[in-house]
Length: 265
Image: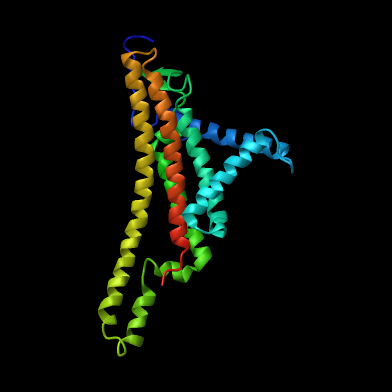
């Protein structure tokens, strides 16, 4: 690579091609590769699945059963687990593969030069804030929709805007005079819950993005010091970080979903 070419990890994902006015970034391309890989792997597993498991099917079923038991420890109810698990596990697999994709040889080093800047063809999907924001919004919307389906739209709505609490004031004011102070406070707490939902999105987004992006910067920095040997321990560390971050994201979706499905009195 020419000496005047700048090769650095940017905070934003770089566009590599344009389809009309739509830019296709390197992180989006990596995310598509992960999606297609998951689809192909799922089709292969489905075709080779047998009633009596053996070989790799045994390993997959052990992982699946362990994941279900872990989810049960969060929800404390297998019925709730079966509602939440498909989304949580799908997010876990997608995030995990995207986290690991950025560690593969060639990712980040194969690309093209544009205006004296090196632009890689591939970049870990979760190292892009747009991807993590999309995943966070998807997860929180899913938990709220599941809450509406489970306890009903009226009860779920009143968790955030306490219309029911305000309507109770005229009915109970003579029996419980303090209700005129207590119920408006409870209704206000519900408004804080709306802020809490936005905070959940921000928390999920920046936690995942920050850890994955920091890992990329760390590996690039170590490679700049010495490209041979020095980055290897940090790569193993990033493999573990990739698992942990995917697990935290999935577990939080389970927690938020369990809360959303509870009928609070």
